[in-house]
Image 1 (cartoon, rainbow, N blue to C red):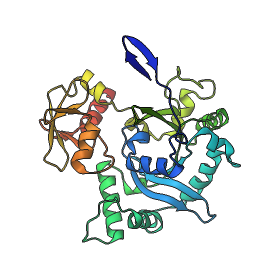
Image 2 (cartoon, one colour):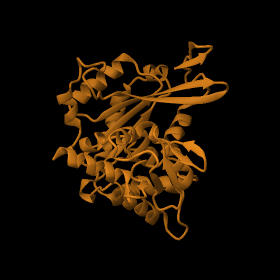
Image 3 (tube, rainbow, N blue to C red):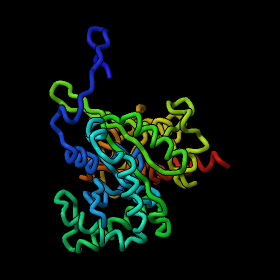
Length: 324
C-alpha cells in the first residue's frame, strides 16, 4: 500500500494486531461482525463462537457457508502467536473439524451450537415472539432459502478457514499439501494498517490457489485444487463479480437496484458502487446500513428493479446460458 504525496509513492508499512494492542478475541469479534472479510462475496452465517468440543478443544468461530457446510474459523493474531503454539495451527483446526463432522442435522446444530450462541449474543437481532430455538431455526431456514441450499446438502463436508495477519512458511506448506489432498482449508491474511490514527484492514486469500501463475504452483495445481470443491460450489465461486457483470453488460451503469425485502433503492455506478441519496457507497455498505446487519450477501440481497431478479439470479442465469 502506498501514499501518493507530491507525485511520489511513499510506502505505508503494515502494523500488527499485537502492536495495536488487539488480542485474539478482538480479531474474532471483527470477523464475526464482518464475515465479508473472509467470505469472498459469498454468504456466511455465523452460528457459533468459542464452541467447546468433548475433548475441551475450543473453536473460535463456526459458520454455515453457501453449500450448507459447517465452516471452522481459527484465528491467530500474528505469526509469533502461531509459532509459540506446541500444536501446529492447521492441525488444531483439523481436529476441531473432525468433531463437527458428527453434526448430522439442523436440529443437532441448533441444540448444541446455534441456540446457545444466540442466547449469549447481545448484538443479534431477535424476534421477541420467538423462542431462541425457533429464532435459530428461522435464521437457518431463511439462509438455506436465500442460497438455494437443500436440507439434504447440510454439512456434507467441513470447510476450515485459518486467519492471521501473517503465516509462517511451514503452515503455508502444510495447508498447500492438505489442499492438494482434498482438504478444504483456506488461509486469509488480515493485514492491519494505521493511517492518521484510523485503522484499515486489508484481506488477502493466500490459499488455496486459483491460478497457475500464483505462488506455490509447485505444491498445488489446478487439477488437485478442484478436488476440494463440489460441482455446485465450483459453479458458485466462478460466478462473476459486479465489475465483470458491468463489463459483460449483464447489468449497466444507471440501473436501479433495490435492497431485498426493504424499500431502499440505489443507482448502480460504472465502478460497481452505488449512489444513494447523492452519496457513493459500496453495495455491501449500502445493504448493511439498510438491514442493520453486520454482513450481508451482496448478490442475494440486491434486486435489479427492471428485471425483477436478484443479482445472484441474474449472474447465475448468465453463466448457465454461456455454458450451453
